[in-house]
Length: 65
Image 1: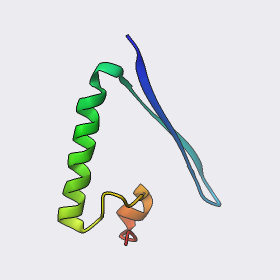
Image 2 (image 1 turned 180 degrees about the horizontal axis):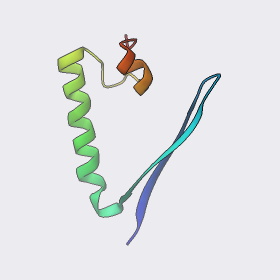
Image 3 (image 1 turned 90 degrees about the horizontal axis):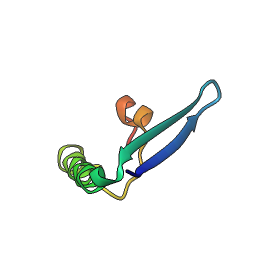
Image 4 (image 1 turned 45 degrees about the vertical axis):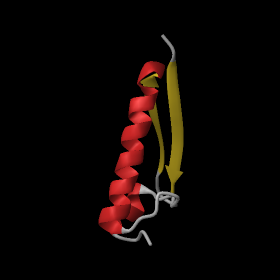
C-alpha cells in the first residue's frame, strides 16, 4: 500500500509550525472530492473563491478577502 503526503510550513515572527497530512493512495480521490466540495461550500457561504489560497489564521481572524 502506498501513501500520499502533503507537508506544509507556516510561520511568523514568533512561531514556526510544520504540519503534514498523509492518506492512503486508494483514499486520494474521495479525499480530494471532499476537499473540492468544502471549497465550494466556503465560496457559497463566505464568498471565498476556490482559487483563493488562504491560511487558517487569516480565515479564523476574519481577514480573508
